[in-house]
Length: 264
Image 1: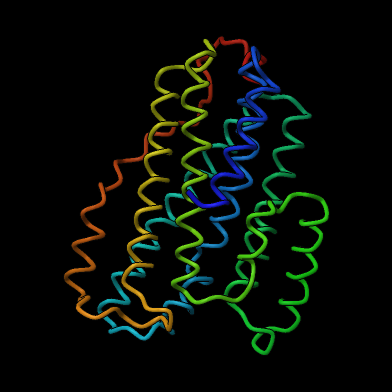
Image 2 (image 1 turned 90 degrees about the vertical axis):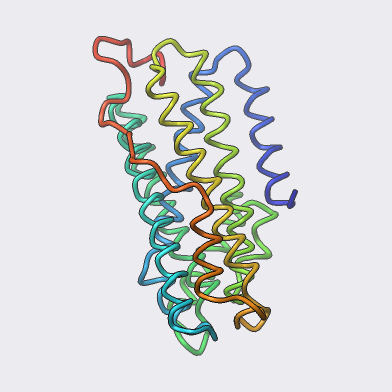
């Protein structure tokens, strides 16, 4: 496992120890963390961000289209995840939680933009954006919001290395939702349907990890296509990843009549 994954494991272990015997509090922390991270990638994976990078790859147009569609599906999933966890938090109805929700969402969006600028744009291409993104990344490092293991990846990189980085980040997203799935079984206020939705999101994140791994595997360090890779072979590999099932997330977070404070 990568250092990014191990560092996140340690963070979750610390929270598990801190909130031992109080799963609802740990779940709330995980909800807020998940919102920030889902909003982050919903910005970072957007077509206006990744489209120009994919357009510059030294690959045939047909291969480029397969890559573009795979990335678009990942982005659509992440948008749904961000909206889903935001609804869960807002429906708790607590002013403090609502305020924290908007702050986490804003932090995720700003972080996603900053990382995208740092990873995809040179100083010569966008000096003002690079300067602003660099200041925001530095502020995040000083405040502890940017994990130590992530810091070395927040610089201009090949598209292959970008995909490799997201193999690691999607692995930690899976870990977050897997932990939520396990904890939810100890909170009576969370229905079995909700637990299944958490599991579905975890499955989505695992699928994203595999997709990014495939894209990294077919590219060289110069972002050209590895020998022997064709449109058909790439499409077959991506299609071999379990297709996403229809999204089942509902607007309601907890069953009607439930004490909402039990999951806050």
